[in-house]
Length: 111
Image (cartoon, rainbow, N blue to C red):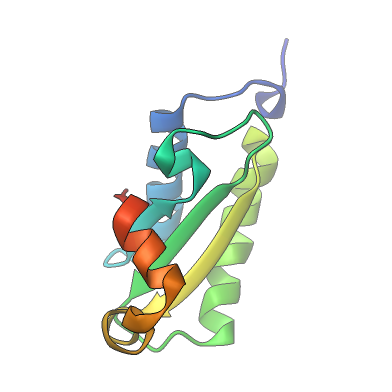
């Protein structure tokens, strides 16, 4: 019997799980996959770069809630997530001038 963390899941299955876990914290959150997994040039050991956009203020406590909840998923499937949480309005105004914003807009995939 294989443990779940030893079995690599398909990309779609993992994205569905991410959506499910994030929705448990904030059903209205927008989730964007960016980086190598969005571009399709990931390696077997690549992490999952995830941007979460929320309507509420993006506080440290709020980001920690998402990270903590997703950590359980990381352990169960044997994958690593890199998570950033921003307020939607801030993301589309203040951060619009950053290279990070441009990279996410150009390569990101809405989950």
